[in-house]
Picture 1 (tube, rainbow, N blue to C red):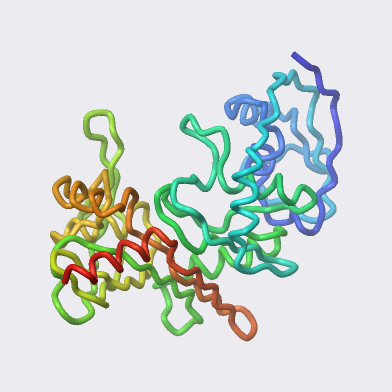
Picture 2 (picture 1 turned 135 degrees about the horizontal axis):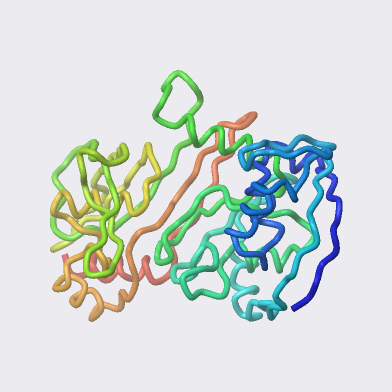
Length: 315
């Protein structure tokens, strides 16, 4: 165990707007969550010499006192060089505020649940002098546009855009487009799926399912190309619920190809014989209504393109 002395952290302008509990959870990674909240409740953590509730939002110039702490020595996690290279080659856009990559399938966006690292930890290792934060998430097996910010102000601005989605259609909207291969023949025309979603636990496994009492979830499915037993669909989502597209596709009796959680085992076995060994779901583009507008686009990976070519040859 290593004892860390009391210290004063002066909040920068780029850190302004964060809740004090979230700030501490991020900066005291070796301290248990329960202990951080105990420090806040007991007044051992002070802001400008005063006690604050966990929900207090920090301001630039605030002086945050962190009391002496006993920290566990933890091994520094080093992301393998081949992963770092893969992600460096996946960058599709960056400026002073934003970083976007074409996330490969099979890499989680962050560590946890037995994973030592994810995209965000790897990118922070690639860019150690930049304060990178995830704007949104993609499932581990989903590929495509993943957005991060380089400072707190950018994160706040873009989160505000995400939160206003589908609430007030008079405001500029973020546009999120996905492509998926689904099982069977999706009927012609764009179909709006408005089916709320909630989480359940089945046999010790957490799953999402359509539930009238769940959170609002809206997707627009449009067939692009029909194959013998499958359909390539373009999907625009108004909300970003966990597993939303996969659950909506299953709800419509056309599960996403390669989906081991919500999919069809027979179709998945057939696709593996054609070389598809992953979920066919790809975040193709993300439009941000910032200034003149920023559209981020990510091409399909070679294995998805090859799958489509194989299906085309057997029409």
